[in-house]
Image (cartoon, rainbow, N blue to C red; front, side, top):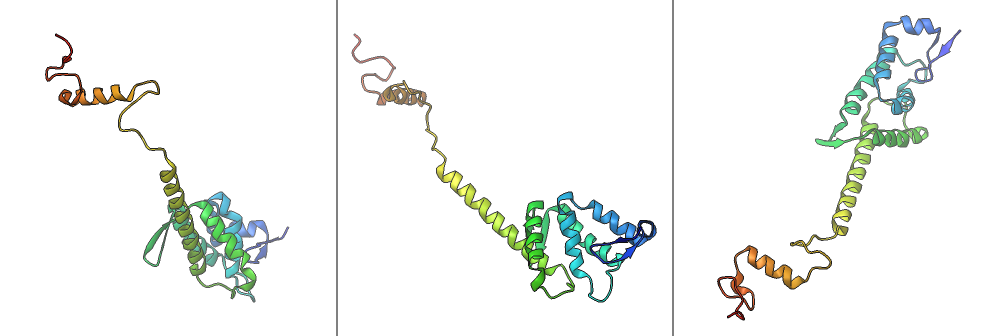
Length: 184
């Protein structure tokens, strides 16, 4: 049974792939990547394959390991800025890059284009989160500074507040000792 790797174009038996140290390490690295990205990343790594020959397993492993750290950490440092990148952002960036496949100059040499797209997607996501936060803050109902039930008389609440701060002298009809002026 002969197997063809869809990423690198190498052909051979399954045993050959599993016995080759470099292919085994590449497979181990690929399996360490988050599940939702596996297919996309393998298609992406295929963009590095030279036209005239197969992509070596050592190169596949190197490319995948370079991606593993920023994906696992959720952080991508690009142009001295740290972008917080979720799996969903990586997926969107890979989708965008793979959609451009026909217009790219292949084989790719670095992850620069993927990182640029990912950073751009992360900035869009952060801006959207900020807009949603501002909108939620703007639409949040204001809290009253004092607790008042629906049935409570506002004058009584005002009197209680003045009493709480020891300002009974401001309450009409009460003397300084707290009694009513009308009592004899």
